[in-house]
Length: 177
Image (cartoon, rainbow, N blue to C red; front, side, top):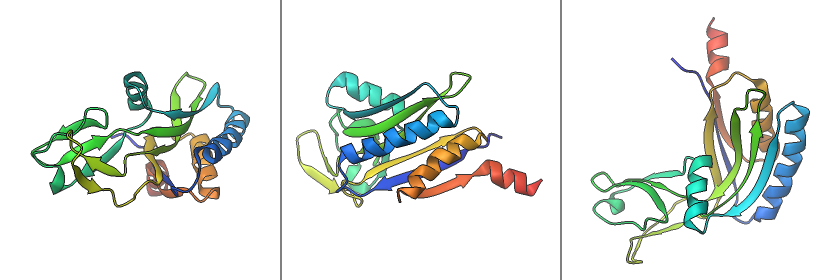
């Protein structure tokens, strides 16, 4: 059985990407103080096939499941996976502001916020659905490590008011032993 530290972040849509970038540059300084490095902060639009392919490496995308997505064809540039029978799909981000941190063994983790299309259209441009969370910046992920430095980074998001949830299976395991 593998244990993980799970987290999700959300920032309101009215926050500009430059504000998130400034926050992450401050978080980058902290990450280096925690002994993590090298680090990198990027503010990117995923508007080309190459950039969309890169975005797939740094985020899990946004999972949607809705009956309006059954038996339709979605544009390739917004969707990584689409199961027409169930209406389940993974939507690709259109932009993101993120920080990559590397620990001593060379393992990288990505921390940041991403924006996804708020209006989902079929490949012919017909509107199918509007996401309930609109244009908010969102991200969720997990780290399979008990290293407290990752929790410290997540708590920087908490101080900014952007931590939505966290579940630390390592802490649960420790309290049960």
